[in-house]
Each structure stands twice: as structure tokens, then as C-alpha cells.
Length: 271
Picture 1 (cartoon, rainbow, N blue to C red):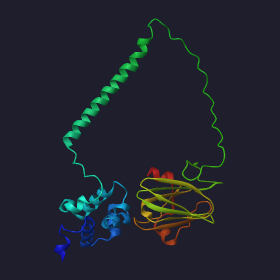
Picture 2 (cartoon, rainbow, N blue to C red; picture 1 turned 180 degrees about the horizontal axis):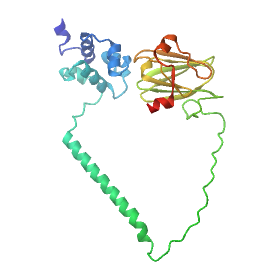
Picture 3 (cartoon, rainbow, N blue to C red; picture 1 turned 45 degrees about the horizontal axis):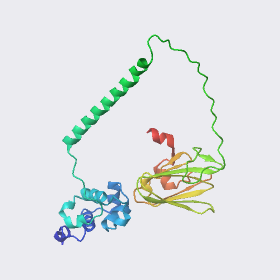
Picture 4 (cartoon, rainbow, N blue to C red; picture 1 turned 90 degrees about the horizontal axis):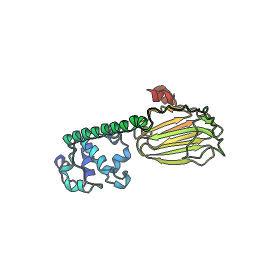
């Protein structure tokens, strides 16, 4: 039976990848954590549900999983050709890349020398040598005052002020490393839902006590009221956080014992 499981006549590349994962004793969550992918992506590839995979990422994801499991996609030519997307490009030629870098460097240096030759001597060539430079009186720096904003703060999806907490609510910022679903619920107001894509930020203002629910907490960075929330959730695991009126995180006891509840966003950027 084990010989049939590894044979190249599997019904699809997804079946071959799933069988290889099972043979190695890996769960979907373990493989997702190892590859830094979501469990939903792995399930879609193994089920060959390509409509649930971001367009253009079908073959890269399948090849990434195959390399981790030690599966050669070329051993399944018919099944591999059924994977959507263009045929993989030929591997780059190191010698050609080196020559292209040298050529681009030479062109950049030549362009810089040409600009310097035109700008630096050009000023002296345009002015006669015996003509004295006439001093020009310069006025003081212009005093510019920004216009007062009209109306309330922008709504969800527009540029928001950087004030962590104001009369419009608490500033919440989220950024995803993979596709996931996010829900923000505040008091009696309708819940706000959004599908985050890779590196797509979502910033909004929330009033009163509220909660944030993420179906894949390990791939989302959450900042509330200017503080980074260390929820410690692994890739593929859901996470729900409850917050007070001023954005204070109501930390569960098990989470508080593992990680500090919040860290200022500036400290995170400086690490």
C-alpha cells in the first residue's frame, strides 16, 4: 500500500502533497507554521481548490509545499500541468545577471557624470566673467498656516489622524502577512468586517468598549491606541481581543502569563 501512495500516477498534485505530508507525520498546522502559510492555503492546495488561492500564487505555493515535503513536481507531469498559472520561467543565468549588473552600473555612472558636467560648469558658462553678481534681497521665510479641517474625521479606509484616542474613538491599525478575515464589534454598533490581503493595512476609529476577532491571528499585527498588541497566537489559530473605552486590552490570564500585554509601537519599530 505504501508503494501505491508514492506512485506518480496519483489523481492530482494535491493528493501527492497530502500523502507526502501524512507519511512524514506532519499536521496541517505544523506544516503551516513551518512554511509561514495559513492552514486555509494548505487545505486549498491539497484539495486543488485553486479558486481559494490568490490568483497567480497557485504554482508558487504548490512548489513551495512540494520542496518542503521533498516531492518533485516534475515526477507528476500530467498533474502538474493541471495547476493554474503560467509555466515556470527558466532559472536565471548567473553569468548573464552579472553582466547586466555591470552594464547598469556603467550606465548609471555615465548618467551621473553627464548631469554633473551639464549642471556644475553650465552656471559659469552662462554668466560673463567680468559681470559682477548682483546681490538679491531675499524676503524672510513665508509663514504658512495649515488650513483647519472641515467636518468630522475621515471614515474607514481614508487617512486618519495619528492621535491614539480622541472624541471620534480609539485608533486601531492592523496589517496582515497573509489573507485573513477580521471583525471589529463595538457596543450596539453594527460589526465591521473586512478581508485583509498580504501587507494590506486597515485603520479605523472605534468608540466605546470593543472587540477584535481574527480567524488567523498569527499573521496579523495589531496596534490599538498606539500600542502593539502581543497576543501570542500561532499561525492558523483564531484570536479575539476585548478592549476598554480608551483602548486598554483586557488581557486573559493565560496570555498575560506568557507575554507582556502591550508594547508601544515606537519601541517595536526600533527593535
